[in-house]
Length: 119
Image (cartoon, rainbow, N blue to C red; front, side, top):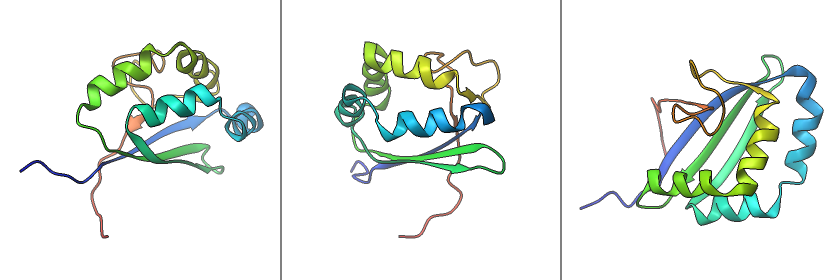
């Protein structure tokens, strides 16, 4: 029987210090098309946290769908999401070696391994 639990995802990236306020401002008013696409791609419980001392952004989300790769391709195909990523990528510094941005197949945010969980 397939696992009916959502896939839990955690990621990190660095935020450029001079982009701190702009990053907070744009996330105070996320574009509706971006929010719709997130939901349409079966992502829920999505949060981004900031450790200002290290300028590290930590994101968590749940994926509730059955085709993660397919849903991520739908996300990448959305022109409003592409515009959003172009804006926010410029505020960030990736930890993914060789990545050129959110559209890069290697990814932009570095995925983390879950080593402990208790519900």
